[in-house]
Every structure is written in C-alpha cells, then in structure tokens.
Length: 89
Image 1: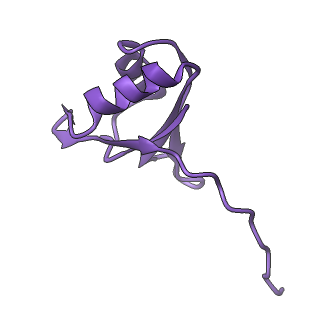
Image 2: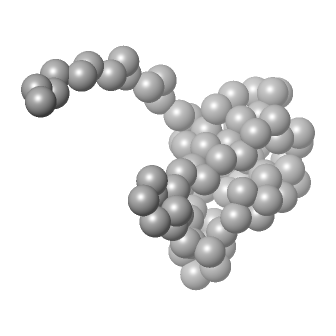
C-alpha cells in the first residue's frame, strides 16, 4: 500500500518517517520529496507498506496526528499521471 504523507516538518528525515510508520508494521520504503535545486524538503513524502491492513492502521493512527508541531495528513497515494512534454525550445 502506497501512502501520501503531507504537512511534514521540513526537518523530518526519511528515517524519522520510516520509524513513525514502522510502529504499525513493516515499511518497505519511505521517501521525502526534496527540491531539485536546494535539496530542501518540500514538506511531503510517500510511505509504502506491504500489508494493506498495516497501511490502513497507519493511516488511521497517523492522519491528523501532530508531529513536530504539524498535523500530518495521510492518504492513499494516487497513481502518477503520465508526463507529456509539450515544451518547445
């Protein structure tokens, strides 16, 4: 189960995110999205858990939970839409 996690503190690391979700089961991946140029967190990320029931428990337990002064938003991640490059140089 792939989950979208938003409203993260800019100081939250991927290890912090993994540890937070691992209380609910096995985390197969935890990724925080960063700005390409600065490397700074963009305040959201993705967590993947293999067992759907564990992912659902994590969503229920962590959605709206305050972490580092911010209420997390946890939901099922939507599939990424295919990119269309219509740029003209």
